Image: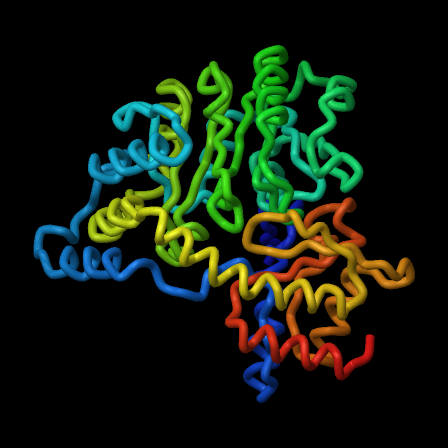
Length: 387
């Protein structure tokens, strides 16, 4: 047989964590106690009221059918109130919000809605690998733009002006930034909106980390006129301990949202009604919820910093988000070498920075999504290695 996959499949690799977690699973099956500090998946449950809402809705016989692709009015209303309360951004729940089955799926919907084959897309380096892989899947031409420690991991818009901007249609931003933990800045958002309007480039800010170890949640939609050219995605995965629930959203002007809906309505069949009702309840969380979540991550972050020091890395203590990003001091050791050594010899899974782009090659990322006890155990194992 001479059957081959499509060119788009040939041009991408399986997601790094998909392949690496198979390796970790095999090690566990062989009896090894692997401590995973790689994935950014919150390990605690959502608020008890969220679970109660889901349970009650599950028991109603009329809640199990197909739901509208635009999501429940209750969910869109809750997203609108959430944005007003925490970001001081006004969003019309009927026309300016589109619920998503997670923001990762939103990357696909937005790429399909705005990019034709051959169109240019600006992708941060380092940055979330999905921006590149989905851009490849839709046949776009990727232009990586550099983020560096020297510039606070913020875009250099003077450098961007030198690119062939006439063919670029979309730019991915992600602040607070993953993997570096760089905070959102009003100045960056203002420059991005001005840049997008000047060159007719859609600016998309992926914003799932703004409540984690961050005192001032920010949205690019706070910038006057931002909705004319910008889209923001947000998610309940990190902020509300709901990664497996797959609840996200996109917010923008009604025209952009209608284009995203055209794509989405042809790909999925909407979300489960009890889940949407529970998500709406989650968005009602008060300040105490976020403080409790961050108190937990603060205690873990202290241990993560000790781990980072023990493996020979420097780090910026002002980082926010669900990870700690550290620079490897020894120039003879690559991020992949260090991560593989720790997995093989200490049975600790950390994320090598190279997977986020060439500018991540000298870095390691530690997730805060493990108990303090497991992180203490990881630190003990590392110290015994005498790296």
